[in-house]
Image (cartoon, rainbow, N blue to C red; front, side):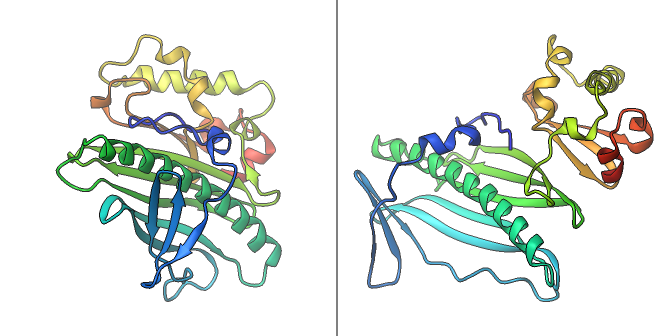
Length: 275
């Protein structure tokens, strides 16, 4: 995943590993069954969760499970968290089950680290006496756009609601090559030397129906946004440019889609197989 800073100051996931503590904090088991994760200046109480279960009717594919818990400081709830995440259930295909599960687990670990950083920010505010009207919350859900035995494309949507009721939403797009268990680069979908042609198509679509307040340098900076903004859905290549990236927040997200026919001269054999 190639993440951008969101409005609350979350760090990009690619650097999260360098920010994580070198040692896991000691944990203790309390009488009520909750686990206390102790750090030098705080204690985070997280209620134990039952193992994920597939919804009734899910036989094979990608199912989902939900986690709900709260970070607390003493008796004060600092941040409520609700996660609805994908989980692999590849019956009869152990190799694909292992590959997909490992990749999903890595993505989810990155999301949880982001949420932990957000909790640390709210904890700092609480200790400084800056408390909102309600308890802040974070919700993560996902949309599965495309799934075969060779590739999957999905979007994670992280929604933060501050203590003052302000809502921020950020989307993370993940495109997985399930043969090797890695993210797919957009350039892998394109034939050699065709990246500039795709940028020209994007620019043309934005010029035809420009969003209100389109930034002057937006068309020149599209290449820096592409790898973190695309996904595959319904046989189309979709590019979602988040609000605030190429135009003011008031313009909202900008979704551009390309049919296979529009890209036929640009796609590699790999790209043609996916679209």
